[in-house]
Image (cartoon, rainbow, N blue to C red; front, side):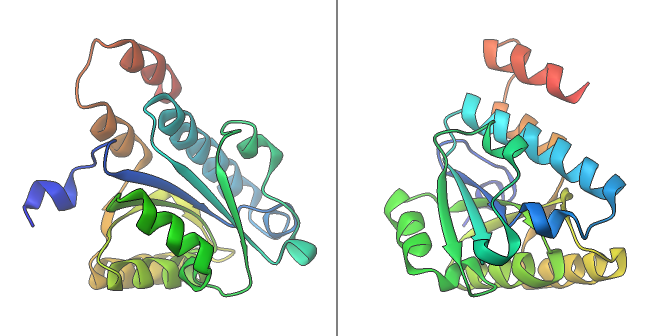
Amino acid sequence: MSITSKFLLNPARAVLLVIDVQERLCAAMDQNALQQLTKNAGILLESAVELNVPIIFTEQYVKGLGPTLAELKSKAPAASYHEKMSFSCCGNAAFMQQLKDSSRTQIIVSGMETHVCVLQTVIDLLAEGFDVHAVKDAVMSRSNDNKQTAMEAMLLAGAVPTSTESVVFQLLKVAGTDSFKKLAKLIK
């Protein structure tokens, strides 16, 4: 594996995964941090739609935690959804089958909670041989200490730390295109 194939995203190889940004779980979060997460996840979603990057939402125990935030769902109407009971998304057979069937190897990860579902998913994806890009400004936990500890663990396990802007510009590759003009407005 080359360093560029691990560290630089390619829209033809990438999938955007948004983990468990659900109504009742969001109510328990710091509202300022939640606002940042929804803004950045929204930018990632709009970028993925524009650049034909498949999008997968997961939802943990919908009966108890509610559906994905409508604000995010509206940005990606063609996205796939997988309800799960396991904390790791990889515990859902249909989710794993969709990833394997896509033949894509780079997973861009956003969502909550960083120290539970995000962390366990990232470790399982790495164990399955995927290149995982953990978007630090698009993940959150109720506690910032838990988020930071989980980010450290993901990095030690081999995930690539990244930010929303880095993801957008890596997927775009070049300036001056119609997609660049559209997406650049999102991050001003």
